[in-house]
Amino acid sequence: MNETIGGNHNWNIVGHEWAVEFLRRGLLNGRSRHAYLFTGSSSVGKMTLAQTFAMALNCESEDIAGRPCGNCRSCRGIVSGSDPDLILARADESGRLKIDAVRDVMRLLALKPYASRYRVAMLDDFDQVLPQAQDALLKTLEEPAEHAVLLLLAGSTEGILSTIRSRTQIIPLRPLSLELVKDHLIRRGAEADRAELIARLSSGRIGWALAALDDETLLESRATFLDLLRDVLRGGRVDRLKIAEQLSRKLARDKGQLRTTLDIWQTYWRDLLLECYETPVKPCNSDRKDEIRALAMRANPAQALDALNATRRAARALETNANVRLALDVLFLEYPGLD
Image 1 (cartoon, rainbow, N blue to C red):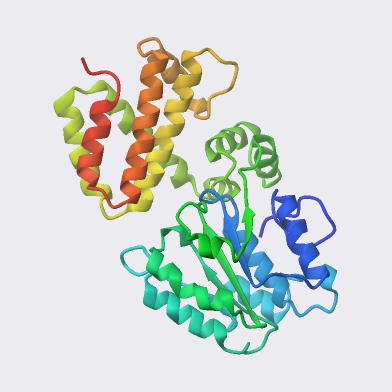
Image 2 (cartoon, rainbow, N blue to C red; image 1 turned 180 degrees about the horizontal axis):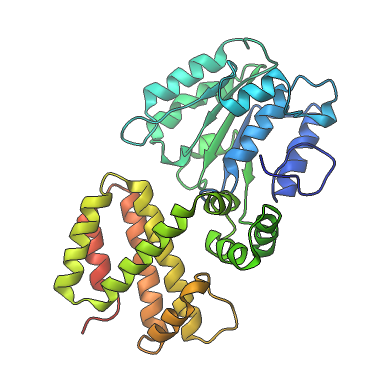
């Protein structure tokens, strides 16, 4: 787990101090809620915080202030995912959590704990759950069992029913500062230049930054998709449509990788926009600054902003199961460089 940043406790969370203290105070005062909604961008730390909170709820240490201890049966079981009182909801092959799965989780949550104080259910990507499946939670939220705690994780509250939002304690997690992420990576053994690059690319998402530090293939994949974007901008209409066809075949069944690709491209267009306006802000893709500077000589701020907005629209469209090939065709034809 991540090393502790401040405080005399064992939560071992990087950043998000206010959220940690809020949850700890609830435990210390015996005022924990029966349902929480953790929101924030992907890899910002939602799962780590929710898991650590679950450990603290069921930790067997007699010292409440020292929970989670990380060493007891319950703490070890939650970390490994084998604790009988931790219920993890699983999406099906479509990538969504269906109503039958939600009902099954609620049924298990209503049972008495097997060996702990609470039964804890964790549902990830809850903003992607369809409204009728979300409705399956309402009875549990309206009449919660004393031993049940529900932890929902979502990118935002936008796709979540108001009846659920009003019955949960919302914990919004914000991206961390560049310096905090960079300093933590250096403490983990990264060289300063590499730590700064990863910190900038992470956009404050500590989970992604740590994964990129440990797995070089993440940065290699990023370089591949930035090279692909460069090829798109250099090509004519026929070339762009051909790349769209190839990319759609490769990523049509991997929406997660497609979202990641579009996120990477958004950072590139933001960097170009900053360069067009000659701001002193350092680019996110600092290893591509010469390439971005050269492109800024040929593109104007309006084109950079249009490209950024087009990429955002494509990302939103793909969240609604739009046709991948069509979305990429439209996107690439909106990018600058064509007459």
